[in-house]
Length: 363
Image (tube, rainbow, N blue to C red):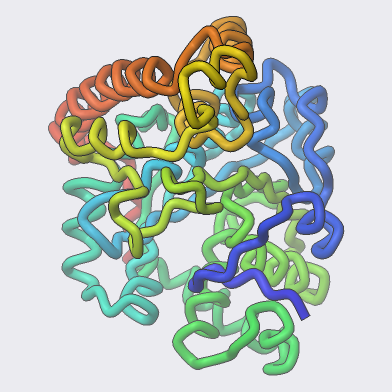
């Protein structure tokens, strides 16, 4: 039996089979107006109930977008910026509300981070980092999981809607900490609907799909005074490891990029990255690069080149052999330096305004 584990290292190697095995919808960029870079380039590859959200955008119906912050370390994974970019898209296309929850309870139960540490990291780094990456703070509501009694009440209510065997079939294991973390996440995802029933969209990597499946199952079984509307998921591919692995991992720090990270260190990692270049310059000029195997081109495609025509030109020159592996690495280093510089400046600016953000207070 295949399992996607949001806490583990088992990752799907084939996105097509992932769609088939877990009943996902293949993403169609024509479904949404003005699709962003990730949508246009098939980096967003699948979803659940996306037509409901597309209908909300088209007909100006209310819907919300939501994501969580897991403040378990001092820095964030470079690929996390894709979640923010998709949240930004929905903020610009009619999302009535955007919620960012700080999963301090989950951090405590699954990562051993104290609530005090989680709060400090969230305010000093994670939330400013999300804003620096493009999240609109004026359209965003923030809260801490541990303070939201309504979420905790929902979690207890939802825990009665599933059996231990069903939980194992979704997650592969069922230790108490993970059970509590999962049902609390369902409470988070549906919390916005307590004020008003409306569809919601959760942009995530595919390893988080179990949480969305669990939430959707619980919605179908919840017959109470409150009627929950469908919960949609939007899934992006992973940012690949610089050594060619499917996903950047902290277990291999030399092949991953974090935010923030010293630009000299990042450039060194890029210069050592796996490329699609040939064994000799003569072969490369004659045969051209194997672009599909190039982690540096992946970085440009996913993160560093916004203009499609510019990316196409890079692809053609590299594919033909006109551009060498050394040149594409130098280009990526140049663009990464600009990105890191902009991010750092925006991060410091966002930190200065943390007290002006809209945090839900609970009494």
